[in-house]
Image (cartoon, rainbow, N blue to C red):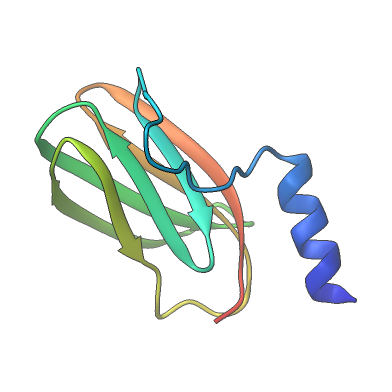
Length: 102
């Protein structure tokens, strides 16, 4: 029941399914699915991924090289719970609230 409640909550906050082939994306996107972050980048470059707990404490920060298109990052080393994830690239910051359950 708890897992279903978390999935329902994620749908309410706008977590989306990973787009299939043929989808045109015109802006950077950040999606959480099955403990993976999916980040759509409009260009090659770097992205900073930060993870915060509910108290606002930074739990993780890492800079990744990304290519234009979809990039996948697996989250690990976190306790089960709700977190806020930000992805920053070129002055743009995307945020998503996630329920992490390894």
